[in-house]
Image 1 (cartoon, rainbow, N blue to C red):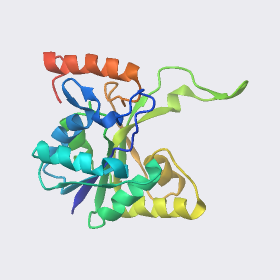
Image 2: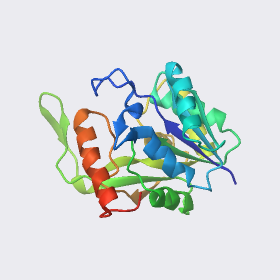
Image 3: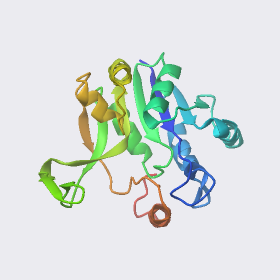
Image 4: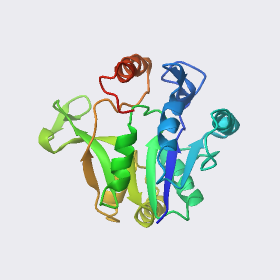
Length: 231
């Protein structure tokens, strides 16, 4: 069985207030995406890794891979206009793979152990998630509904899917013109496979704005000091 990975690097850095896409912003001395790539490189069970990014940053990403001496398993292709389209294009490039893992270039604090646990998970479709510790209401200007907090999950990446199940869900979504913010909800919506939830980590944050970058520096300091040494 072959396993492929899609790393989504489609950010443009607007919320960070910088012209440089956030995956290239320096965190603890290196670009955010490098923190991810260095961990992925240790995963011998991954046959191929495809990074999807905007066309104007494909060469920059390829140059980064070359300078970091990352193995030939890694490649970079142009992504789509949406996250969903980028995943679809990544799947087409990994058509020979039976299992697909999806991660984001701006989630640098996933650990190698968490990647490996996802790969080793007996379920074909599995995601990481954490329980939501606060109350969530539905509404805009007015409260329009409530949710049972005990049943809510904060969805994280990485995620793993059976390639056929994920591709089928994407094809159905494309036929209906629907756009999803992540893939587990799509697989669930179209009933192409059951998705197992694994316990995630509060440290596995997504870097999207300057506050996240500050928090990220603090999390990295914990890794360096050895209090959560498992990076």
